[in-house]
Length: 176
Ligand code: SF4
Ligand code: SF4
Image 1: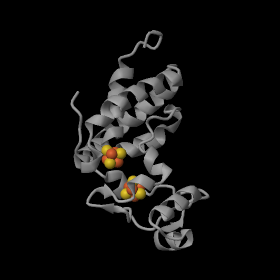
Image 2: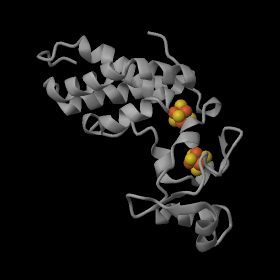
Image 3: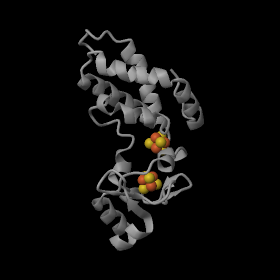
């Protein structure tokens, strides 16, 4: 299966595959394959696919997603930019709706310049962690995974490969 890298093509495909994607989520939750096994497959797919997609020519997460910026991120970023934390907050942040943290006050991110992160060495943890496919509990996070499929080519391709792999899997075979 070829990788799809073009985000506009991915958005079109996601509209076409909406029913299939939600159906697969239901399958994952009910098929009896242990969550740990799904995590292992996702981790392996992520390790294989992420080096094949160039973030420097994409930058779409920084354009479409507002990351959570915690107090520790504020301290790091303000220090990196040689600013006082209060001034940094006033200039770049707003309170995030559903967490104790902040987020950037503009979208695309104010630090994205020509598809590059200009604060890469002191970017927030939430940015470092994106697209979160190295984490455990993939199945319980699958709503946000499906949302991220139409934003991030890495997530889209991992989810597509996962569908092919798991739907072909004998759920009673422990050798996977
Ligand atoms: S801080 Fe950097 S990595 Fe995070 S959203 Fe902004 S440009 Fe992207
Ligand atoms: S993490 Fe995904 S959305 Fe962000 S730049 Fe890389 S490929 Fe694009």
